[in-house]
Length: 511
Image (cartoon, rainbow, N blue to C red; front, side, top):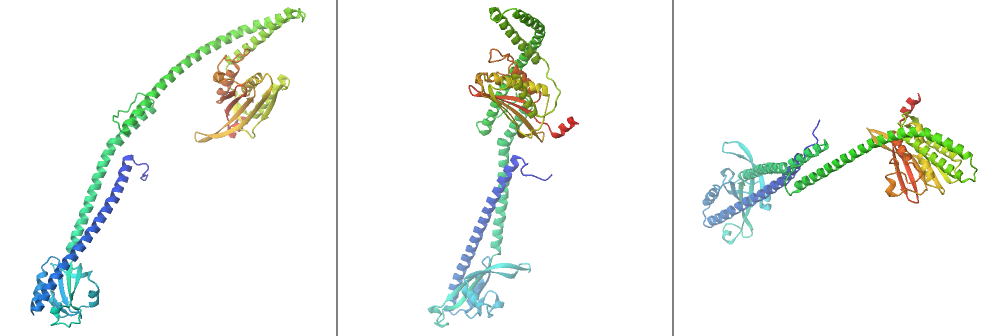
């Protein structure tokens, strides 16, 4: 696997970026200083050649005035002892060399006189022999000084001539170049040392104040992720890392406290569930014991009532007793339904067909829906769900019955289905089917909204408080969920969400 900058450690990224910035900055500084040094060397070379040329010119003019032409050669030779001076020539405007430190060039002609006259100074590479006799190429700096005609020169030169001679001082730039090269090399070495030192110091500081604290933080977070809520970050200081460690420790403490509270609440729920299970078993046993005597009492009351005329007050008493017996029968039936296990005969089922079947059954049993308006809106095509149709029918019917009781003066009831957007589950798309039951009844107050699924909780005097609890158990047994929204005097909406099954699974069950 190749190197990836994104996967590199934080300390490497910081040092790499910082070093790159330092390299760019110091490289520019080295380049700038080198250019300044080379410019300074050029100025020093020019200044040196200019001073030498001025002294030579004065000495040459003095020797010419005294008629000592032989001293000119000695004057030129004296200045060749200066470090770096390679050659000094004096030639007439016509190019004939009249004095030179190179005797072989005496009385020879300069190749391009106009070039010397037009350029005061220039650099040209020359072929030289070093001390070992080897041929080398070196840059030579030429300084050109025009010797102007003056009265003291009139005895030998025409008054009309403006320039009586050209003095050329040639200076080798090898030593200057070597010095500049040394300066450049030293600057680069110093830059490398500086970059290495700064990168090392930065790395150590980053390791101490950032990398190690981050490692401590991540270690503690990993322990917390594994369930160890006793882990704490041991970092002191008022800097950002110290504050971060303090905040993380505070968060872990709150998480630990929340976990303890959740465990206590869970234990209380377990105790309550055990108690409710015991009560359920007891209620189931009692219901079985009560059912038969109730049937006998109901039969006796019916026979007794037949002996009383309709106008007899005793007939009203027997009717009330029979009404209460019916209520007890419903309670016994609900208790038995609540206590018995939910069937697990799951098959792929069309929710639209099931909902329509339950609604039609309800309308038939009620003898029509004159008291309220019914609306159906089913989404199609709707994927099937894996459910037990009989138990889900009971869940739907409980909600529809509650809706009817919530609208004693009439209203509107709507049942609809829809397909929810897919969810990502185990790398695959999982669809859900939702069934909505909406009524325009009296609604449920906020204080009771979270209690309606609790066993034996009811807002009506004639209710057993088990219908919605049974419905919730059925839905959750099928891997679904039930939600409720309600507003007093506006209405209530129940939403049952069930997982849809894939077509392949449906075909397997159909085969």
